[in-house]
Image (cartoon, rainbow, N blue to C red; front, side, top):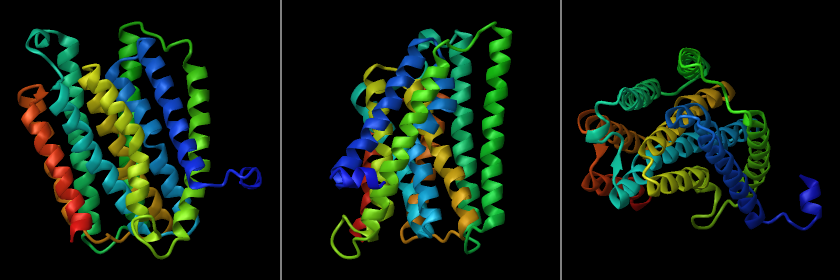
Amino acid sequence: MPWIENAGLATPWFFVGLFLAASFLMVWRLESMAADGMEGTVLGTLIMPYCTGMGNLIFTIVLGMRGGSGADVMTNCLVNNVTNLTLLVGLPAALWGMSVITEKEVANRSHRLNRLAMLLTLFAVLFFTVTAWAMERHGEIGVAGGLVLIGLFLCWQAFHIFALLKTNRLEHKSFPRMLPVDLILLAAGAYATWLSTDWLVAWVSNIKTGGLISARYLGWLSGWLDVLPNGVLAFYYGWRRKAEVVYTSQVGDGHICIPLCLGMFALYQPLKAPQGYQAGMIILLAAVLVHLVFIGMLGRLPRMIGWLLTAAYALFLYEGFGK
């Protein structure tokens, strides 16, 4: 990006700002889609994940093209998914409550279907995570494993697309008129994300010594940066009491990392687990099981459980840094 550097803008803060501006652009258009009548579960499962997970996806491609470390990609994905399912669901639940379905809505067919869709999405996260974990326990995830993970992701997305088309046909619904414009703006946001991620990865990779801001913590730093759009969505929709959007956006974003990002990087070179990976996977799987139990049985996440999930994130940080 010589034209940016020649303008004297090649500073980390500029590119962090560009990344955040692109993320807010995508969040703005997502909110427009929701205002146009697109259902929360559809928005959170099929569209939001590609926007909030775009940074992870681009980080994976950039690192693959640069011959980077697979351990950094695995750390990036783990930081993203654990943050989503502990801190970014747990803290809004602790602050405002997280009711996917209330007692008055139990008799409503659409609300029951939304809860079932959410449970299915959580089961998918559980299945994808266990599959990736099992593959890695054989030593590494190679090309064959990468193709399996990508295939699982594509099958999952195809299932949702056909379900959406079927619902629209049965209920005589049509897509919003502004959808083409929204998609163009989302593509512009994705391009800005690419530019910023590419420069920031190169910059951090060149810092060989130092503290937190160094190549040693590239996976952690990129994971935190990539999860910022998710945090905006989680707290905004949590404050608006739209628990179904909070859940589907955070859980759906996890599908971009596991299995898609891991599968894509495995096509470049084999993936080997970094230090602390096993503990992080256990925390992630435990969080998914907690969500399945409480959403399945109560249709909500109690505030106390929200605080416990937030504490689980602190444990995750301790496993990554405290040791």
